[in-house]
Length: 343
Ligand SMILES: Nc1ncnc2c1ncn2[C@@H]1O[C@H](COP(=O)(O)OP(=O)(O)OP(=O)(O)O)[C@@H](O)[C@H]1O
Image (cartoon, rainbow, N blue to C red):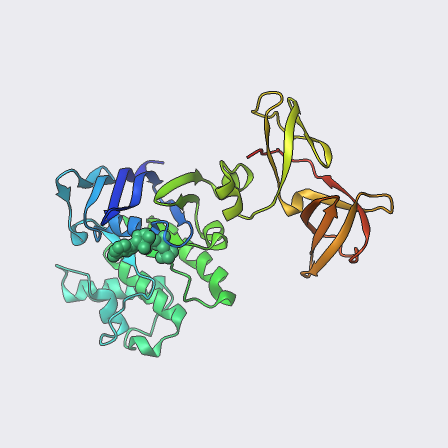
């Protein structure tokens, strides 16, 4: 796979506040990258910088070996060959669906435009709705028009700002699957902004997790979830319990729950001290009258229960498929086999 987008040392300030702080990122052909992070971390500013909508951006932006931004160079948005879909879709209410889609098509005969609009309507499954106005469409249909409009002029890259925040949660998963298919069929790479990890997991091939203007970790969702490089990453992607731990062997740590073995060799030296991350589903509960744990809370969620378990002074969150433990039950707690992470 070759690289579609490359960002090198991007920086941006608002007044004297650093908003983008040395961003390096690549997006491969046909890849979807999620910019994920808490409110205010700089996601939208980064998207705007790629689109050419942000002033005073330092560093370099390359799209398929073409330089969009560099020292002394800032290509205007319309020359970047980048499509953008805003959170509110920014469709023109006074134009029909068809006219919205054909709006950006320049230098084409009207017959070619009509053909392209029909192709796009078919692609986003809105055949027959070309003559409607935007207020006559549902939120999901409006999003499809925005996608059709952005893809109509064949951009090399599509940027999407919080694309699913206005979509009903019941149809969101279906919409994500459909848009992924559309992007793949059109061979378009995409960068999308979200603060919801579930959306990033479901829609993206790769995540870049941002914090205070920096990309703190990037890679495939599972990789980041299983091997977070910091507590911020671990917590943002799911949270868990942290136990004091000391490395006692190449694949073992000592904790207040006893010694716990790692499925893979640890990359820490002997006697290294840290906090062992244990996700709630990485703990196992066994009903045991002699166990050192006691269930202090139980929250039923259908196929699993979230328990709060106290072991001496330690309080642990445990997610278990066993549903039969009542509040007050005595339990033995152990860690399920996995690759241990110390943070
Ligand atoms: N026009 C502006 N002038 C001054 N500061 C701004 C401006 N726009 C954004 N900021 C600041 O820049 C930082 C990054 O903003 P940005 O909108 O990129 O964050 P974000 O991660 O997209 O947040 P959210 O998820 O809330 O949209 C924030 O601290 C914000 O307050």
